[in-house]
Length: 155
Ligand SMILES: Cc1cc2nc3c(=O)[nH]c(=O)nc-3n(C[C@H](O)[C@H](O)[C@H](O)COP(=O)(O)O)c2cc1C
Image 1 (cartoon, rainbow, N blue to C red):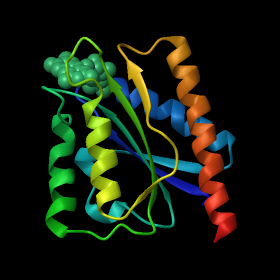
Image 2: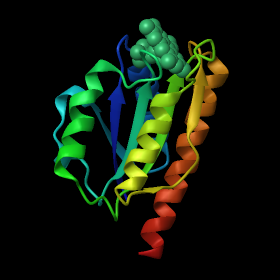
Image 3: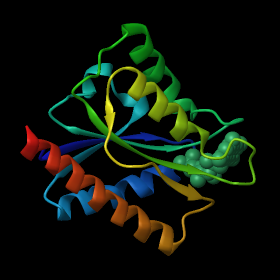
């Protein structure tokens, strides 16, 4: 898997900045990543030949950001079969809220339920990302890239 699609769920742009960091880390690991706002994509952006990365904030009371709901509902409406799709989720949240990082849990459960495989545990960022959060996110992306590469080797 030499290509990845990073889909961003955001309301105030923080997840976009983290998506840029992930893209750089993937690039260093030999995977070229394209970044899209979830508002700008159709269901067919999910392609089994590309690693899928969900990079999302949590908003409302443990909900998806506004820019993501139409995309989520479109996948739901199509009843897509996502077997063969490999994905990983990075989620931003704030532990001051009761439903901490719930948007990540929503995506993990949703995509897994449609047959996709989550290759690495979710990465959670609590509050505005500090340097160590960004560093951790990049290390997580490198680990995810290794898993995606392993899947390709296994065929
Ligand atoms: C109105 C509002 C509601 C939020 N609700 C939650 C929540 O339910 N759970 C959570 O973990 N974080 C919550 N957050 C925290 C955001 O996920 C966090 O600030 C994130 O970094 C924002 O990312 P964004 O700039 O990409 O939108 C909320 C933030 C705001 C402003």
